[in-house]
Length: 122
Image 1 (cartoon, one colour):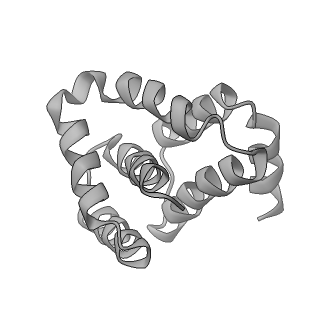
Image 2 (cartoon, helix red, strand yellow):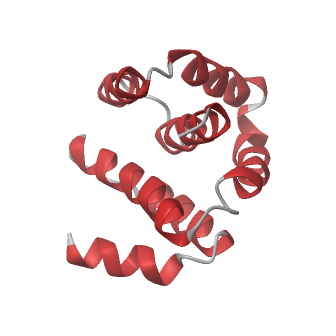
């Protein structure tokens, strides 16, 4: 994963967790992800990007993510998005807003069916 992908991946994770307000468990999961990828700088960038204007964060992120993740091979897009889905399961719940956001991104990237199939398998 190159630095641009790390940045986009951390933005994706942070965006979904911020959807209803970042809680302590979600922050812990984000930091664990950043540890695994050596991506704390990218996580900070993502959090700052979201904080610039929380109300427009999803639309701004959606555009950026489509340019970076949306052009990757299907397997990679699916792996990134499913990883966020799994992280939501780690915290013990998935809100309707978070699920809808991930489904919208999957639709943007042309992998909605693949994501739904993978979720059903899990």
